[in-house]
Length: 120
Image (cartoon, rainbow, N blue to C red; front, side, top):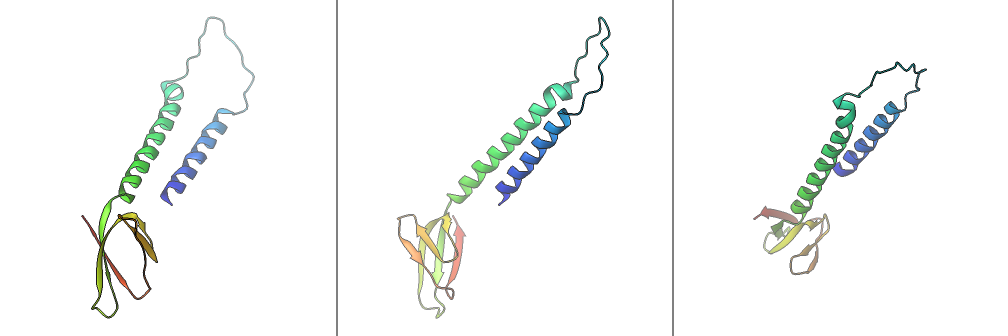
């Protein structure tokens, strides 16, 4: 969800910057022996901001991928309290109604069962 928000924000910023460049130009009067040099912000600022935004998105994507592949210990406790099971699964493989263990076992659980997730 956060990735979609950041991507949308990046697209909006790019469109604003492109539209700012396309301002209608006024009549240009050229003066002899005068050179017009854009400021450092115009020259390097826009490309630097896109580079910074790209690095931020890349670092967030790598962090999210590592977090979703972290192995956690999951304890499933039944409502009666007598039965419980302990499994190891990746964070990304756990959903509201099922999970996939590290060994590849698919486990579905009911709404009454309680999950206890411990990060190793």
